[in-house]
Length: 311
Image (cartoon, rainbow, N blue to C red; front, side):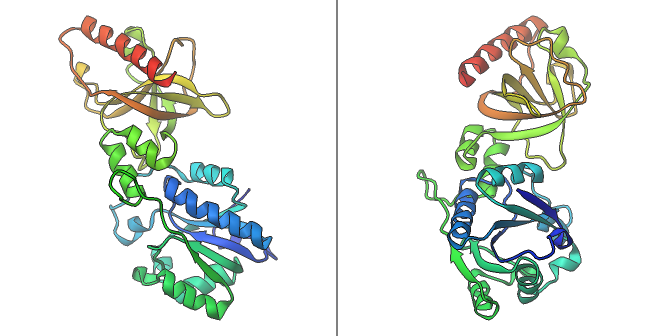
């Protein structure tokens, strides 16, 4: 799969393609449906399938300080899109100047002049161009002029309440600590990535050495508490882990951290490595215990619960 950053990265002589556009944060089940239809349409026409997305999130440019928590960094989104059969991912640097493009100018600049779109696939609520003035209807009208068609794909709905799947829903569930609910939206466990850094090393002293993550900017971190999950080092296999999020009130901590104890492993040297932790199930909330012995007993119980939940 090809990965491009900016229109200038698109190869010279790029032919027709089928395109879908969006932030696609999390590549959740609704996104997967749209991207899957994009790939399916591309195969029908015998042309590549391209996903266009943006960095930073458009809301941060239009309303500084409003950047939403991210469900997946761009490299992870591209990886997930590649698994769905996408041929190329174009990340457009989103600037104030770019945000002022009219819907028609956006279509000409991106879809027509560079990607030579034969077909565009979107969800029913897709908006684009200055002040989000463009709709799927106006996109289709412009297609009559510029020789592309538009396929509108309805989004999945949750069986429990009929609410359409969305990144907003997934972020809310993650923030509430409902990682099982988030995984239903995403189609997989919610993942947090970062570099392992040195912490206070209290976990090692307590018999449960943890990897302390310096998480990526704007990461959607689950609510404070203890979780069952998995830790993966780049290129390695996923290892069962007990995960902790919070300020460590037992030691009057103030800084919120994400830590992972790989079950039954005290021989790992992860410092400086980029790792990913997948949140599988919530175990309990953050607590302060009367004694260190009580804390250690509860941590041992958490480890056994994590073992059971990820088995």
